[in-house]
Image (cartoon, rainbow, N blue to C red; front, side):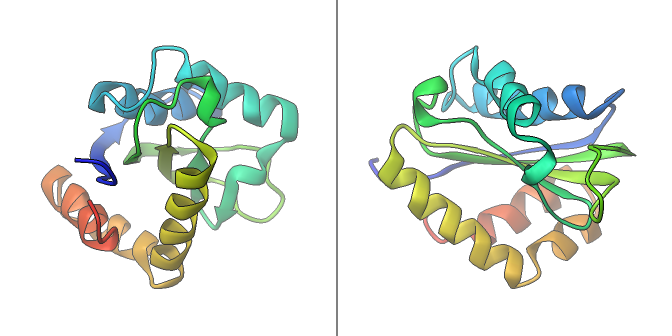
Length: 148
């Protein structure tokens, strides 16, 4: 099933700080089988090295690392936090919603990112926040990614 995107969701996740939140979000990809065991730490390093640029819009972070850091397949997972965390972003803190993604290579990386960007500009974050429960959360994300 080449080209398929694996989709996951985690709801009401408790995270003490942004590092824990990023790890929790990336663990969802490991659980889906699309990321290797080192991927969560690689995602934390991205923020440590580059700052909170992954906080794209109010309350939403896009968690990722390079494909060679453990991307085994194409996957996207949403994590909704029980309590928002601060990333140190001037405009978009605190974060309550994390979208984690991974791909096995740079081409899929770009395609996945552009699909996610389109979904977000179409109101995906609001729909995810409004989702009643875990199943609704997963359903919204699946609905936003045509190949999922």
